Length: 323
Image 1 (cartoon, one colour):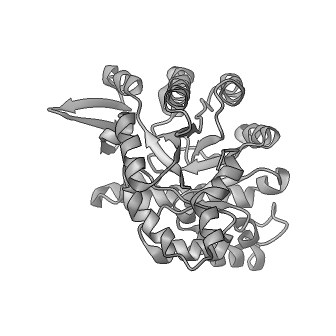
Image 2 (tube, one colour):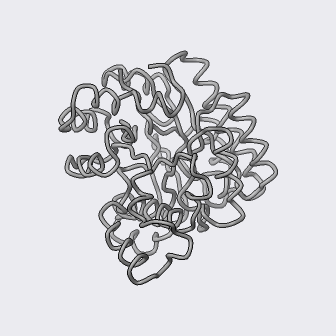
Image 3 (cartoon, rainbow, N blue to C red):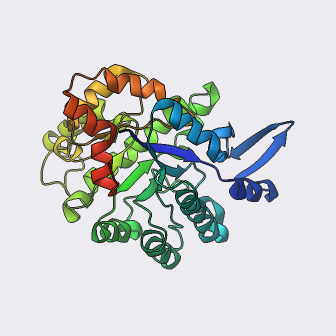
């Protein structure tokens, strides 16, 4: 069995809403091509974002039994007073797909985190009424960070509900540094999750909510390659260590990773860091074809039992799915 834990959508109702907007984020058409503008970042909508039949065909061709759907950014925090409406639109659409394609989809919800009362209500609705299996938490929330004190309630409530927080990059805080050479997708997004995860670790949140599971996509971003430096900075030079009870590398080993990297060595290093029980197959479809990642997982130096965990068993355990 194979479960894809990172596969994105831009629902048609969301795209229709973006087409009505005259300020970013917005969408526009040029011939048959639909573009999404979020500040200095322009992306092209792909068929796999909104054509669910096409997504299922891709799943079937790649041998994927079940996909965990999540929205691509821009998230609710980018839409001001419309944020709660955008969150409901995304979450309702994902729930509709889980009903329309029984056994093929599960979902992660998004929340209007700049509207705390509505976000708390939407989280409970998403979990209890829509059967969402976790929260997609953007690594930056319109320039702010997930570890900021006003968002700590989310970490506590997710722990209470027994659901994971799945980090994911948004239009990056480093956009000015990376957009000029078209490096937003290659570098900017990875820096986003790297910064967010490092801040979560040194904030002390993982000690305050020890039973909460956090997933970092793209094999941990760049943090696995920088974690030794973060250990030295905090533990030896005492920079940012005030909330830590152990080295950052020990917290990092508690994080779950997904396998989204087209470089086999990166996935092998992620496996070495968190082990076969905290690594989950994911494709990042439609940006990446699932076969690119499944071939890497097929070649990992693990037993058949461990490979089965990476392909499906770990995700089934984390998200409460049948496997």
